[in-house]
Image (cartoon, rainbow, N blue to C red; front, side, top):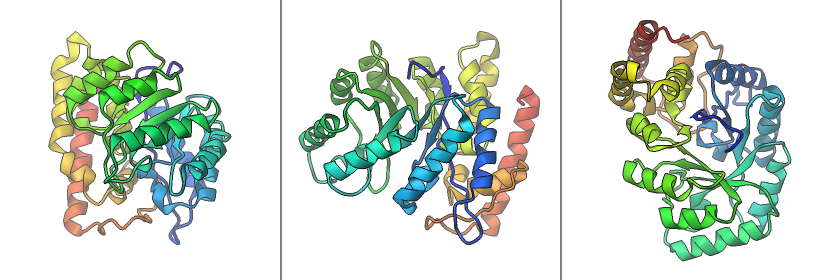
Length: 307
């Protein structure tokens, strides 16, 4: 997005009370955590937000709350396509855009069923474009309920309409990432990579930034990487951070997002570890891994003087 600097866009968590109601006070604290860490934008109402476990009313209210707290400091995007016909999807796209977000995110798997072709996907998306007026849109290759990757050539066609300004990539394939960056290079478009495993390579290839779940554990570290990935004087440190991300890939994904909430408690964030998703309960062994991750992160943070 042309209003966003190259950097980190968190996929926001949704905090809940012990009875699993949305905890807006803690949500406010999370917004400030992301902003104080240096995030250049926010992705609300996404998979990390447990969007499929929220009602439409909650999706809208959460997004409105985030917009209010952000107060135009950074742009916000949010998912707007869920169940139903293209017409019903379009209606919710309009509703969530009216909250004040920068762009509405379209999940690629919501535009066609798993057995349907890319032609069906393309036809449905163009129909959505036609009935959502001039609302800026983006894509998210959401892995739930199934992952539908968008091919670079098709993405390029959509970008060429002038309506698609954002893409969250989950291909895990740096060659595809590079191709998608290339088709969008002459447009008001940004690709944000979800895969921390090739974070440095993606940034060096020209991605607009990172949007990985690791940012719900240590956003300061992801921001630091976005700022210093091409600093010739810090390449040893950059490589060490990339290695840290790679070595801890399993623990950050295990029982997520509960694990991320558990980790944030060690950082002094008063957040309940409950979630609405059916993730595994954090076992004693998992909890030990989280403690180890926090200790390793603290050593790295202190070593590089990351605030």
